[in-house]
Image 1 (cartoon, rainbow, N blue to C red):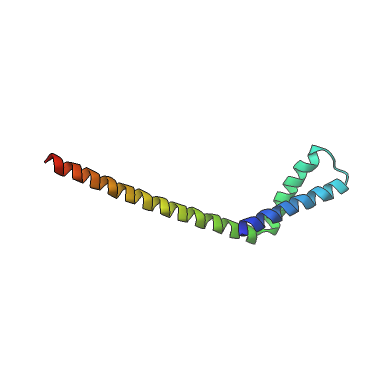
Image 2 (cartoon, helix red, strand yellow):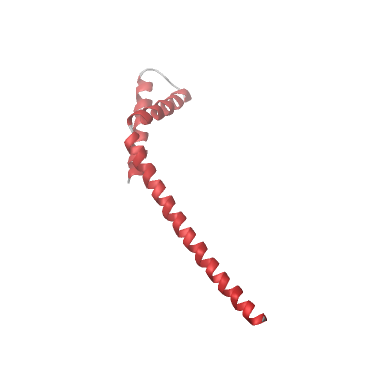
Length: 92
């Protein structure tokens, strides 16, 4: 949810910047480029808590994914060791 909230707030800032620039007379593709830059700067200044919350969610998901991957690798290694140990016993 924090990621969605942060994304929607950033889009709102970009849309607001776009509307303001349009009302000020900026037209063409330049209004979109300037609106994105202004929106990015405003989000950096106005949304640090939301950005931190979104980053924390992403970091937690990455940690869980890494943990499950480590677990899968360890299980695979254990199965492989069991197979190798079994083959070694047969050749003795």
